[in-house]
Every structure is written in structure tokens, then in C-alpha cells.
Amino acid sequence: MLRSLTKTNSISAQAAAAISKAPRFASAFLHTQPAYADNTPEDNAPIHALGARLGLQSLDSSILKQALTHKSLVGQKNNATLEFIGKRVSGLFATEFVHCKYPTLHPGALNSTLRAFVGNKSLNKIATEVGLQHTIAWKAPEDESVKLGHATVMADCMNALIGAIYQEQGQDAAKKFIHDFVLSRDFDVKPVIKVEEPKRHLTALLKQLNKEPANSRLLSETGRASSSPVFVVGVFSGKNKLGEGFGSSLKMAEFRACQDALTSYYGQEQKDFTLPSDAENVDKYVANPLGNTQALI
Image (cartoon, rainbow, N blue to C red; front, side):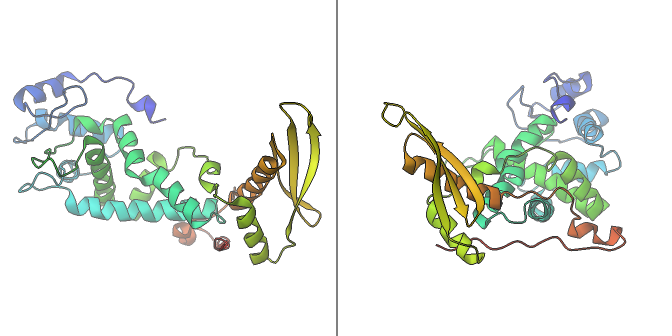
């Protein structure tokens, strides 16, 4: 969806005119840093275009401009406060969404999932897709020991934009923006659930859940006497099969079976849930399951 918004890197005639008046206007095409000295329609054209693409026409252009003026520009009305607010707002709505969708995720996987949605790398990518690079104003640090790259600036401005929406239009508008542009993307949680010692972790988890201890069983095999054998192992708790894995050795197959069992448990996905922030919009709110804490090993 986002990619369809920015299918070209070309800039409009108005934007080109703005560039000629402000040589430091930033864009991915010019690789320069902007400084909006004037407040003319030509100078604000890229900002108005961005607002139109994001459905923010009702947001005052001055607050939008402030959100896009990075805090590295000391002495100007920059986005330091808006970025601080936006980061907390995006963190709140991302946390409630991920936790409601995957209530049993262990803390490490939850943190990794949140970073995948609202971390700097993700926000920089989203900001680039919607064309934020054509509107931001920032200054590279003169001190080489200070690490401030374009990607960080883009993420900061994206957070500031969320903060501006929250401040000017309220919680619902900020939440809608975050869900439309940030949380609408697909993300596979399985890779972030992996642990270093799955068998030991699974044993602790079953004990915490008052389940029968894990029991590994060989389900099938082929080529045991050959140079490339394949073993399939299942891990059970009582009569319930928790996971299955294969490998060129029994140990490898058991390792993968235990990891599969942990992925199945921690990666349980809720298809139908009500976000806590939507509690007042339903007739009778029923809290989502809280889930268990991570097993301690």
C-alpha cells in the first residue's frame, strides 16, 4: 500500500522551484539538507504534498513544518518535543496491538516485534516510502564523534509527525495513522521466538504450566546407515504432540522439535480481539488474555 504512494523519485515543478530558492532543500535525489528560510507557497509545496499523501490536509502546515524540522537545527522551532511525544504514543499503540494479537509472546520476542514495527529502521523505511525525505530539515553534526545519520533523522521526524497528529488532532487520529502506516504491515514472529536452549526452555515452560514433562519420540527415519540420514522427532507432553522437527541426527531433530513446540506456544495468534483503547466503543468490553510470563531457566 505504502509503495503505491511513492512510485517515483521525481519531484514536481513546484518542488523544483522551491529548491532553486532554497539551495539546501533536502531530498534523496540531491542529498542536501534543507533550511526553510521563507514561508512562501513554493517553499511549503513539498510539505503540502506530503500532507495530502498522508491524509493530513486538516493538520496545520506550521505544526507539520515543525514536525519535519529536526532537533539538530538548534535555534529554530524544531521537533524535539513532538518527537518525544510521538515515540511514546507509537510505542503505546504498538504495544497494545502486538500484545493483544500475540498474548503469549515471551518478553524478548515481544521487544523484537515492537522494534520491527516502531524501531528506527522500520520508521525510516516507512518515511522513505511516503516521501518524507523531500521535506525534512536537519543539520549534520560538525563533530565527527556524534553519530547522526539520515536514517535516524527520518525516524525521528516520523515520530515527530505522529506526535504532531496526537497533539493537534487527538488520540484517535494518531492511533488511526499508526495502524494505517505502521502496524498494517505483515511481520512473521516465528524467527524472533527462537531461544538458545529450546529443550531446557521447554522443560521449564511445561513445569510452569503444570503440564507433563516433555518426552521426545522418533516418528520416522530414513537412510540411518547412509551418508545422509534423515530423522523426524516429535516432542510430547503426555499424549499431546507439542512440536516436530527433522535433522541429519537425532539430536538435531529433537532440537528443532523443541523449538517448534516453543514457537507454537509463544506464537499463538488471536484473530478476534478488542484493543483496550477501544473499550469505550463496544457494548461490553472483555479484556484479552494476559498470557504467562516467560519460563525461567
